[in-house]
Length: 434
Image 1 (cartoon, rainbow, N blue to C red):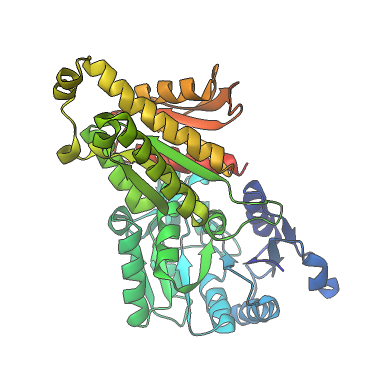
Image 2: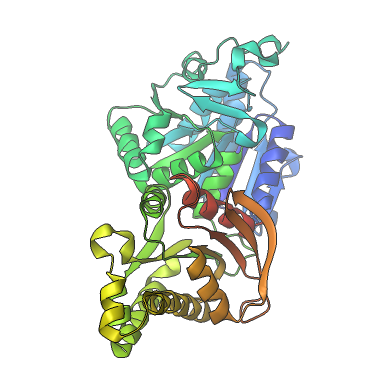
């Protein structure tokens, strides 16, 4: 039985959402003839998309159509309920959101994330902008059937819904998934049923989705399709997939930029991290082997519930940074030799993790020396460059060696702003589902 149910107000929007879900490798089905709908025939579908053709009709009729469809498709197996709405806020948004909430039960909240970044529709400060123009100054304001007279998303909903509406703004999103989860539960305790989110990028949607999951609430996604696809990817394994594709990030950079980026990643993503005790890597061969085994085993034993796992040298925190000169003097070698021991150890950890769990289909590396060490350990001939993720961060595939074709993003340790790492991981996850 489908684990994602999308109720759309028109067929075009239904199919547009279905394409987004299909791009994430889901088997999506759009209902065209409701009179011949047989749910038993859809047992192999990940997502059922049901258009109600209700955007331009009387609000009471729109309510009844959505309510009845939600009741029909309601099932304990469903992980994501979605009310697909127009990307310019036209139609019966409020009453249709009420309908699906009423059909599903009092414990459900509506998570409204109405941005569509790829189409230059964003929400900032509670206001929708289309190609940087306030919504009420665009063609949506003069639509003959569904004119929109305000750019305030909250106003649009409050004019139509019977439920109290709350908002979370871009400053809240920047504070990360735990903050979002706390605010959602606060609003729930205060009796709000509809929460509207600012969102200006795909990364924002990723953080919002993680926060919703962290809050552990029952929810309905109300959006033009992008948020539904984002949160589905986090909650649902496609029927066609044998297992979730995973991303491993190996980070050996030891500078403030890298630390800021790691901190931002930890706010935004659900992940499992192990810090590598770099001191153990250089003290002796025996201690190095034990530390490598510890990190590898901890990742392998705990990675099943995570899309993203990270292995980070603890030198990223200033208090743990080693004095390479003292070790070089102690062992009568160069500082470059000590640095190579650390880099090669992180490469060995990476190699063993990918060897022991084939679900890791994407690799992120930070720091040129780390990337070189990993390439050597993998016996890779080179990287087939395919795209630039952010400046100084490249996406490609390993050529030859033990992991030929592995998707990889490489970035300089000091490259990018504090969001760069999160953007790279998000980009890599998207590529794995294409």
